[in-house]
Image 1 (tube, rainbow, N blue to C red):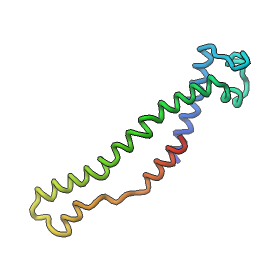
Image 2: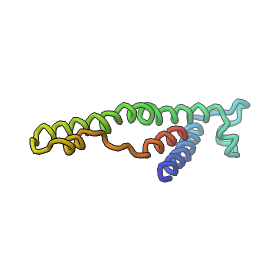
Image 3: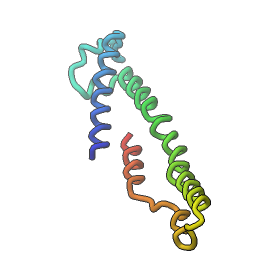
Image 4: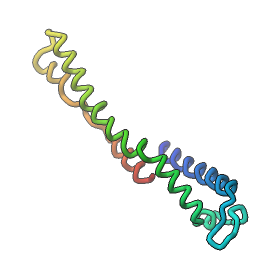
Amino acid sequence: IACTLQVLLDFVLTFEITYKVAKGLDFHTFHGVEVEHVSTFADRFEMYAMQRLLGENAFVYAFPSTYLIPFLIEPVVTIWLPYKLGQIIVRSHPEIQGLEAEDYLKPVQMDMGRYADIVLNIVL
């Protein structure tokens, strides 16, 4: 819930900042109306200038920091690194043998948090 609220807050702030940028750059609608004279939220949101700026901001926000980097880093941090640390521990402690050694080398149990990340990416 906290992540979803944060994303919604980001969307609202991005819209407000984008509106101020469009107003400051003296953008106009297709019909020649200045951005500052567009009164309703729906009309502001549907303007090409706002759509272009919001789309650019969403892309910069989402890629690569949301869609690429976490998926490249996650296998290293959650699978490879714990396995290598378990190998180092088992190798450096001869008293660890049998099932105890296997416990150090087996993968960490996955949690359901990954599904929440995917849902959040879908929202973006």
